[in-house]
Image (cartoon, rainbow, N blue to C red):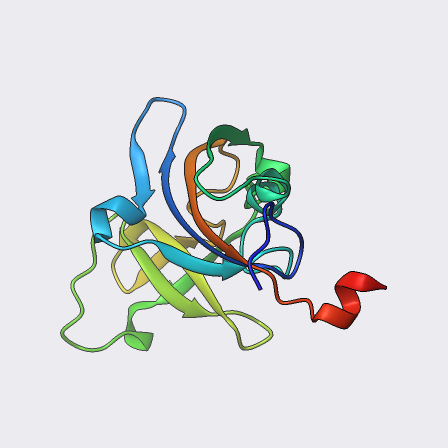
Length: 155
C-alpha cells in the first residue's frame, strides 16, 4: 500500500547527503549511485534523522540539522583504551587517526579511532567518529510504502 506521508513503520526509499558544520560531506547515497531503503521509526536511523522524516511526502526534499544528542551523542573525553599491537594481524599498518572496528564489552562492534601509537601500544578513542558533532542532512524522499495492513488503517 502506498501512503502520502511517512509514518513510523513505513518503508521509505530516499537519497541523502550528510555534511558537517564546515560543509565537509561525510556520507552520500548520491555518491554510491543508489538510494537507501529503511523502515521509519524502527531504530535503523539516528533518532534525529528518523524524527525529521516523519510527515515528509514522496518527492519532497528537506534539509535539517541533527544535534549530537539526537545523533551519536556527546563526546566523552574519558572514552579511550590502550591496546597492545599484538591483538591486530602481524601485517597491520597502524596510522594515527585511522578508524578501526573493535569488539565492544557486550560483544557488539564499535568503531575506534587510533589516536596515539607508541612502541607496542595504541591508544584508541572509543567515541563514535561523529560523536559531539552537529550533522546536516539533505534528504529527498523517493517512495513511501506503508507496512500497515488495511485492517490497521481502517480501525
